[in-house]
Image 1 (tube, rainbow, N blue to C red):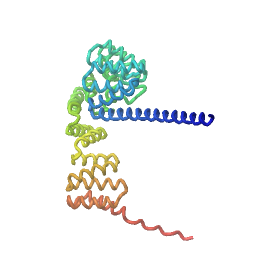
Image 2: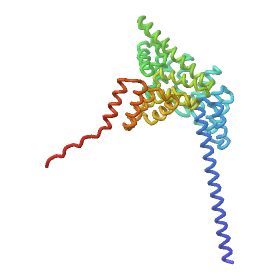
Image 3: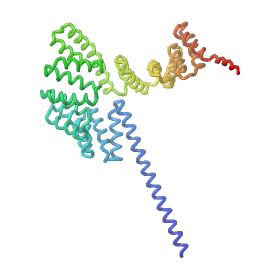
Image 4: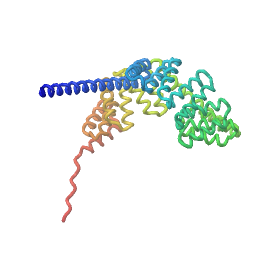
Length: 381
């Protein structure tokens, strides 16, 4: 009888342990499924594949409906798809689950401000965002901008000055402060703020226009005219970029629009944004030799030779007669300290493209690195 009780107890313990193991396995599978949804949703969002990202984040909500971040992610995709009313519903759900979600309040404020033109409702949402997170930067900048629209210049100035006190390199705050100071006829201070804005972001046009206005007030007509010319030039570049970004959002699976976006970023000397755009392009058009070659050159510029090597080998696969690809591949091997391979590919580049002083110099450097170092003479005792 005692033995039977012991066996039964052991069986019950084994069954309980087995059930716990099954439960743990199910939890692990749920966590893995959720992680997959989030990762794939974020990857799709980065490429402006809003419909695809929306599907993944909705799956995440079906697995974990109480997490405000998944509702917030759904709202972002709906905004990308221009389904703004649905997006507002998700933003309100985000706030319901997390009343301190400053960015959700901010996005509701943007909707009221930019879409509905309801400035009172927008102000309320921005203030709620600041109440949720007093350090939240975007809500404070947007509220300062709204106060300019309401001619509450003193309130706007205080907000911009507070932002700059915490973050002295904030471009938007310098630009906004310059605008406010112009409105308050504090021209000299406005000029200082706008010059700071231009120094921080010379590719942004608006500070040039405002600075031109300020100098014109002081009678400096020639300088003002030069700044307005600069404004037009920079504005044209910004418009080209905006057009390319719109093209990407309209046709995110068209590799050509990504390559064009990359070109615009290169013109603006924003190398990493260009790299991201070209990388997305070659994911969609894996046999684009020119894009692989350019990515190889950019990664060399950023001192990432392994990434450069991968793209240059791809480029050579599609165009084995291009000396530039072989030269750059050799440079990538030099950066990795692989001098024998570098010398080999410098020689191929010379065979394909003929004598080139730069390549010859690089070849000599690679061969020099391959020479054995002479043993230093031993010191006499």
